View 1 (cartoon, rainbow, N blue to C red):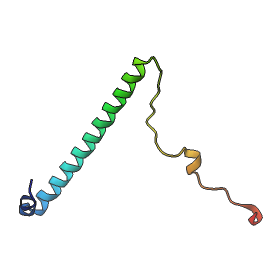
View 2: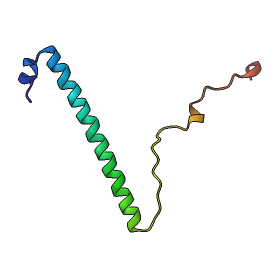
View 3: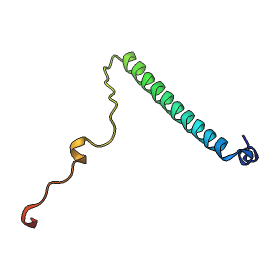
View 4: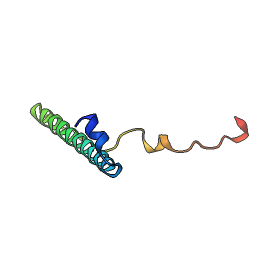
Length: 74
């Protein structure tokens, strides 16, 4: 698709194209993630290593909690 083709789209068509492209990006990222996980599992099995891949990322929930109030400013 060229810039001229994008400019020729109506506003509603442009919104649809953007939504479709974002959905495609998300689907490709998920497929890449699943392919990578499958390769990791295959490699781990080939050297007889057990692995566990969990779906959470980022800091633990406890680290994200609000800090407790400090008494007497100390």
